[in-house]
Structure formats: C-alpha cells, structure tokens
Image (tube, rainbow over all chains, first blue to last red; front, side, top):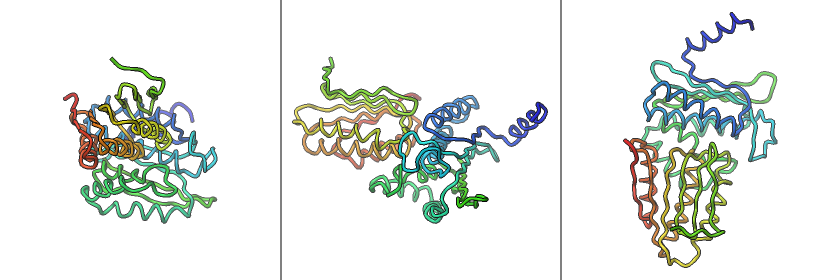
Length: 184
Length: 133
C-alpha cells in the first residue's frame, strides 16, 4: 500500500462512519485497552451517557466472547486464563444509530447451539429479555460456558433492535465464521 | 478507626477488575471500580469463599458493604449475585448487613440490578445511593 492508497483507505473508513475496528488476537489486555480506546472516542463524540454505557457494555461482551470462544486460538482450547484468540470487532454509525459487529470462527458443531440461543432473542420484547435475564441470573452456570449464560441477553437488553447473526462456512477449514450485529 | 488484621483482603484495582477492600476486622467490605476480568468465576470465587469464612464467625457485629461499581460485565453480575446471596444468608442468620449500593444517578442498568438485589435478598438492609447528576 502506498500513501495514496492509505489515504483512500482512511477516507473510506471515515465515509462508512467506522468508529472503531480491530482484527487480530484478543486477550484480556487487548480487550481492556480497546475498551479504553472506545470509551475515549465516545466521550469525545459527546455521545449521551446512557448510549455510551450500552455501547461499552455490548463491546466488552462481544470482545470477551471472542477471547473465550473463537476456535482460532494461540492458547490451548481448554485454557481458562490468559487466552489468545482471533476475531474482529467493529463499531460504526448507520442511520444515526451506533451498531457493533463481531466475527470469529466457531466449530461447525457449535452452530446449532448458538442458533438456538440467539434465535429466540430476536422475537422477545425488552420485558421478555429482562425476565429471561433475571431467570438466568438465578440458574447454575451452563455447561461449557465461561460466563453466566448472560452475555447475549446483556447485549440484547442494550440493543434497540433485534440482534442479527449469520454463519458462513470458512473456506478450506471445518470451521464456520460466526457474525453478530447489535444496533444500540 | 479501622482495625487491620492480617486476615483482611485487599486486591488493588486493575484495568478490568475492581478494588476489593474487605476489612473483615472492621466489618466493612468495599468493592469499587469496574469489573470485567477474564475469568470472573476465579476472581470472585476466592472473594466469596473468604467472605463466607468470615461470615461463619459469631454474628456479634454489624457488617457494612459498600459497592461502588461503575460497570460490571455479565459474568461478574452472576458472581456478584452469589456474593450477595452469601451476605443474605448471614443476615437471615442474625447478622445485620447494610448494603450501600452506589450508582450514577442516570445509570438505569446498575439501578435496576440494585432493585433486583433488594427484591431477592430481603434480609439485607439495602440503601440505594445515587451519585452525581
């Protein structure tokens, strides 16, 4: 890439109203540093405090999902601490609303479970989501979860539209790219 | 005046975990900052175990809990719920436990979670403290 191409690239990022984008390995340190960067940017943009909090919360949930569940991992899959896993996350503005997107590879076997978890959230009202959140808070941690089973519910609670998601086979591998989009 | 004992639990804040200042000797427990550690179950597991051990002592003191968290992620939420369950158990067994729940005046999420704690853990003396505005 020469300077002219880099200028074009930067201009296209600005044109698309991309506030933040990262592709690479996610560790706790990386997530924490990105969270600081996102916060700075939102404060500078004079975004309303309640919107800022929702974006920040959704960002952390989506980024930590990648740290915990991406199958493109530099560290052993069973490791629970100091994980390093690859994916991407993006924050942008569309029709005057902030949105967050993330992408990471998952095992083909995980697709159905993820779909079963996410699909019902799409038709739930905010009250339904809050009720499900309160119920999940009182149940035991689901097997295989590194969180509380509350992550997607937390994002859905902060979103102003149903969560969107998509699975796309990753070429030349037995993994599937898992995309999530939340509009705040 | 606070009494320091070697059994007190102090964990300084990190970029993604709160300051934990549990002065068991003085019966004051404080959590302050942001909470989104990589492994919330491990981070809070020890804290809850230490708190349960402390609460197993005779209920001859009031316990004051100050929680001033400005953000906690979903897995921390779950562990906080477990911590308050332990405190509520002690309150039901006769220890007076005051929970001061600090939150930004316009932070609905933390306000609502506080209300949730208030409903669920009725034995705790819950005090909602709205800050700023």
